[in-house]
Every structure is written in structure tokens, then in C-alpha cells.
Amino acid sequence: MSINILNTGITSMMFIALFSATEFLKHKFKLPVELTRKLVHFSTGIIAMTFPFLFTHYIYVVSLCLSFLCLLYMTKKHGLLASIHNVERKTLGSTMFPIVVAFCFMLSYFKNDWSYYYLPILILAISDPLASLIGKKFGNASFRIFGQKKTFAGSFAFFNSTMAILITTHFIVGLTPISIVGMIVFALIVTATEAFSVFGLDNLTIPISSISSLALIQF
Image (tube, rainbow, N blue to C red; front, side, top):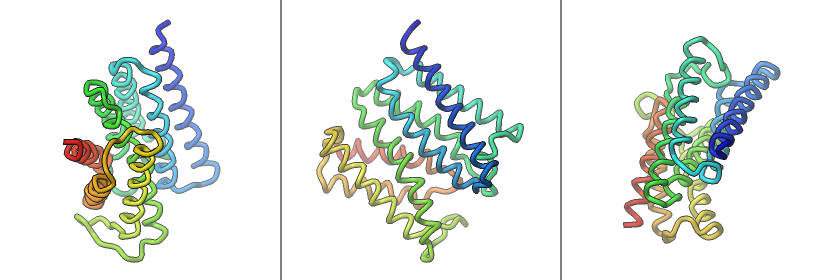
């Protein structure tokens, strides 16, 4: 059996186990859906970090992401996976995530530069949910974008988390060869993008701004 096919099966079971666990936590402990969504958001991003090690060709990642996109669509249509879908606000975030993972993997695969994969996904997995949690906890000072509330505390947390990711991938992993000034510019652009993104589109706009900023700074 191809190692790629085996890893596809293993990864699929990991995602199914994650969805099942968050469903159990939501119904057993009555956790708010915003919290279980953040848990899924973070965990799927961390699992996605293993893809460059598990798959030698982008077609397997694209197939896996399309499968879970269909799963998310069907569960939402039939009222399943309440831990992900049962939010009052209008959002496209959950459906954007697998699309973004597939796109970033393909881009990095063809450019042979995995910083175009790791940075957008890490920022989505860590900075985005952290900004939301901090914003809800300390979000007294806020502003509105297209009718949706944003907080200065959330944006501050997003910027600092993104800087931490950039510094870690540069100085510790050696993945992101950009200067400190470049990191600050990168983090400011992506933070501004997150602040102006509504209806769950940050799952799309954050990776796009990350890729664009990285390409601009490297150029």
C-alpha cells in the first residue's frame, strides 16, 4: 500500500476523532459553540502541520481537503456537528479552512518553499483563535467593521502571536528568512487584514495576506 494512501487514512481518522471528541465535549459539558469551534480550528491547523511530512504529492492533500469540505457541507445541511455549525452569526469560516489548506499546500509544493504553507496555517491555527478568545475576555475597547464587533485587545493579541510565530520560524526553525523589520511589516499587514475581515472570511483573507506579504518582503 502506498504510504500516501495509508497516511490519508490515518489523517482522516484523526479528523473524525477530533470532530467526535468536540461533539462529546459540547453535549456532555454544555460548552459554548464558539469555544468548541476554536478548539477544532486550532486542532485541525496543528494536524495540517504534519501534511508536508506525510504526503509526497499535493493530490493526496487536495483529495483529503475536498472530502472534508463535502463532510462539512453535508453535516451543516442535515443539522449535524453542532460543535462547529451551531453559531448565530453568519460565517463561512469552517468551509474556508480545507480550501485554504489545499491551496497553501499546492503553492508551497510548486514553489518548493514551505514557508508559504506553514506561516498561513500557523497564523490561522494560533493567532486567529487567540485573538478571538482574548478579544472576548478583554474586549472593552472595541470598534465595528461592517456591523461586526472587533476589539483592540484581539488585534493586539493577533499581532503579538503572529510576531512570535515569525520569530520562531526564523530563529529556531530557520524557515522564514526575513528581517525583523520585515516581520513587523508582515504582522501589521496580516493584523489589519484580520481586523477588517468579517463573516468568517478571515480564514481566506489571512492566508492571502500572509502569502502576499511574504512574497513582497522576500522580493
